[in-house]
Length: 85
Image (tube, rainbow, N blue to C red):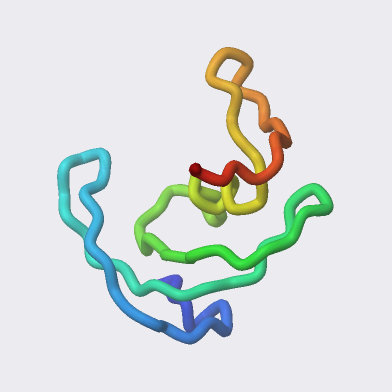
């Protein structure tokens, strides 16, 4: 069973998510430092125990580091931080 504590992260709260099969799951939440293609920052981390993959970087983490997924090419693109006005 994977948990935030397994990764050495302190749990700071819990959140509920509706996942693709329509179940509601409750997840521990923490912050972690993430480095991706030379960019580094702190992102919110949640771990889904029965995820079929070991690492899943969500859109919030990618956006926090200034990346997007191009919907046409499905490629990761660096666009910089987007600040709402």
